[in-house]
Length: 448
Ligand code: NDP
Ligand code: 2IT
Image (cartoon, rainbow, N blue to C red; front, side, top):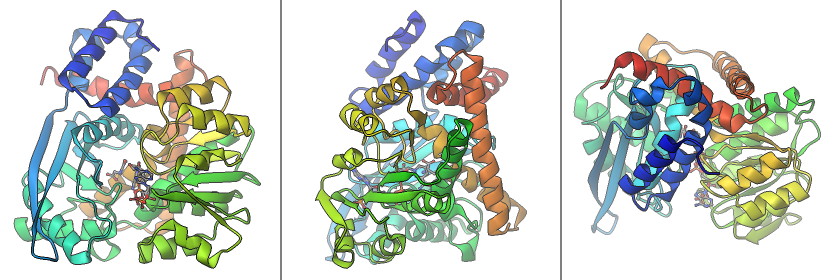
């Protein structure tokens, strides 16, 4: 799609020029700007007062060296990032990704998306993201600890409970958050809620581990109900087998779905009897092994090398929960041809723009990442609240709040799409609803 609005066309060109060779960031910005065209027609002050210009320019980017010593006594050097994209509605908030593919463009796209996602939660959190090209795979616990301590030694200068609150993302779970929290506490001599996703013994929130996957299913369930359907009796395919995928599987199963496939970065498993989640959890959460091992204990299941063919498995509901651009146009066409009725994004930006077009033009219900996976960060914000109160809610209390937030995100996104004459287009609805609160706040703050 090209822009109708000349200002947006020019701005997009400027973004590409200013951020060369960062295609993921361009992709994320383009989608949001396309959605905002009808908004600025009604509210030209968002352009006239510089809000849109400021929106695409991060408030701050921190980029730093992360030296650490491996188990052989050799010095390794990685690159660390933190982007503090937008603080109009609250302290910067967003995860840290540790994966060899991390570079500035990935962190920028994730930080940009986070602004709108965090706004959609209805909670007071701004947009941020960070990470490093460090690969935790195959590293010993002590190597991961030394990396995390070195990473936090620099990061600690830039974050704080009321400034910027990082959390997990790909490659960052409870272990990494623990090492980072320990180092922050030691360096600053303060015990504050500076990170979320903490362990339950030192300030973590119940249900944060489950939150992104559960939230994804609460959102999907609401989207299905609103269209006269449900998870009951549906076949579900979930990519990934990490934090988001595991708890999406658990909740989708609880809601009556049957999950028949999951994956990791090497390949996917298909188990027509329904995936044995306890086995996946043992392999992935405890032993940190490859998903291929599943077939050694489940000989009737199949393992296939490579990730993308997971989308050729016949299913009613597809939940991509691995990484960006994992569903191509071709994969989307296969899902449509196999009768898929709903796709909801647990990962960030897992569908290419071409794939989204295929879904939307074939009547597939489509829940975009910003809306559908916001349950993780929403529960992080609930963790921040509990830390501020020095109090903790029960699992049931947090889960009930999470469910309510996800239902509201669905309704607000659907309502915004309706209001702007794009009924059913949750991509536009989520972008518009997410933007409006941030945009109004930026207008109120003046040129800063
Ligand atoms: P994890 O590290 O726990 O799991 C990631 C999963 O995705 C693993 O199965 C991994 O396989 C697979 N994966 C990672 N990179 C690739 C790749 N390039 N190609 C194929 N598969 C890949 O991360 P999360 O579950 O936390 O994150 C998954 C997605 O959800 C990400 O897009 C993240 O940004 C998003 N997200 C996470 C939230 C959270 O709270 N954790 C909140 C909202 C969104 P392998 O083990 O082989 O690497
Ligand atoms: O992409 C995301 O929303 C996350 N990785 C979670 C961020 C958070 O602060 O909990």
